[in-house]
Length: 266
Length: 262
Image 1: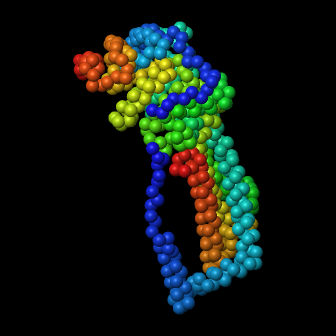
Image 2: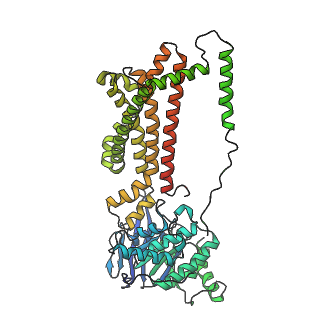
Image 3: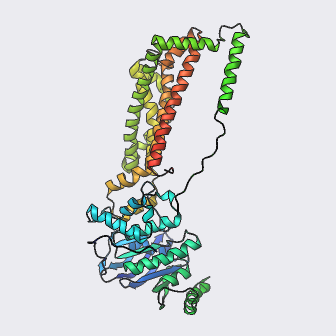
């Protein structure tokens, strides 16, 4: 990882506030007049500021839906989502996202794509330029600022997406299986990079994955979800120092513990 | 990590493409000079060349071709501009699409040349009628491709715009139009091709006036095959030139868009 340099003297401080709280979140889809699919059932979660939460669960447990609710892309649900003690309304720059597909604009360069995150941010153009450069440095792509998405690899594109997600210093960054589409080697590398970025930026992160190994490696706490209907089965504290070692006995024990939940369900 | 490079595929010696035309012309010249046929319709390549020279030097050719091209480009520009406006309205506004869409979809099914009788009754047989016809030829592909391009912008990208608080205007200009531009360009390219094809057709069917198509008809009516062949060659060359121009512009745009490697 290249040395992380800070360019900007005045940057909007990351709002630490009082964290993210999910209160009695329920959501259902009405497939037809008389069938109702309960996607989320009474999800309750308190996330402290600066915490790294991983949510792991099989397909259909509603974890991606939960992220979309927090993000504000979907506003139909029961319950409350509070950020800094205030209920969220629609989308907002204080909640960032990294999708599974990088969703970069093909007609923009790497630098311009990261700048998309600041399109409506209350900064001067000079401040925007500095913050963009800073975040491109953060993900190690300073040699590729003028490249187009089709010219860089999938892993690099996802790093650009991470930079874009962080560029306006959100209170919380949501990650929806961000490494799911990458090969195993790149995935391992990016997990480590994400962890470094998190330790440097101290932004609350909510990371959804179906990979238990990744969940235990990255999270302060692992939220295990079960499907039909989607609810939290249990929350596992990962009390291991970082950087974590996947071969460590305690790591393996915790991972097996979480995995056992899925063995029961299948 | 270096940027990707694309290997150039080897095309083989370029001259191979010339073999068939040269052999063809040689056979033709042989057939004409040995008198294979008594028919006055078989003219030698030499005669065509002489006629070509006469046409060019007497200024007849220039008048004809500039008349045809002037109508072609007028119709192309009018049709493309109207088409872009209509296509954008259909693409951006759901209400407009519901109101006007079905009518337009019906309208576009009418084969282009079926409009000739109506156009000749309303506008006569001269330049105005021809330009109306050409505008029609250019309009349809532009509307269809523009509207399609705008409606099929990836919802994933539109979600990104929503996440970053893009206003409706920012979404239109910053996401929808750039995403649709390749499709819009295809429509414009088709309009260029169709309006040139329609130019010649218009000269056949709306016969009053001057143009390269008219020269062709004159030649065929008087059985002057040399004139006919000369006309065909010219039409082919212009079509080819327009094609090359459109391709160049398309590549420039694709490079700008990062679709092609720089």
